Image (cartoon, rainbow, N blue to C red; front, side, top):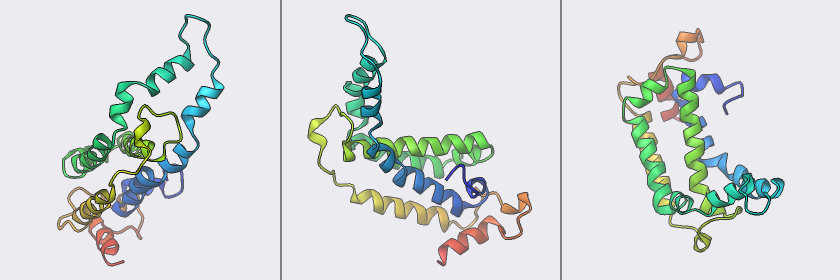
Length: 186
């Protein structure tokens, strides 16, 4: 979603940006985590000598730390996911980040990281610090929250946070308001 032909339109069209955000926070973490990157790294890294700490030992220390247990708790990941979206779309931070490519890429990296933290305890493929979290927590409310937030952002009246696609000379892009209306009536 970031290195494709539509990647550049994420800064111009709200609909493309929302597709990027949902893909990076809700779809991309699943195959990434099912690939078991922690297990793969643990198998690829050689153990350090006796009494020494190498990369493998540091990775095990991080994976089994209390900080990792706290960060992957459903009581932290769901509020983090929700707060980061509300904190982004309903503050001037969205406008500031959308002004530059690095800001937009930073925002997309944040969505991927928060989505990965959210799915890590649900999939439980890699070694986790919490063995009792192999059941699904009640996450249905997050879908309702996401749908509500999307309606507020897309049905906004003024579209003041949006740049238009016409700044790049794309006649089909129209204005941000028209993009929102097209998304609303589908």
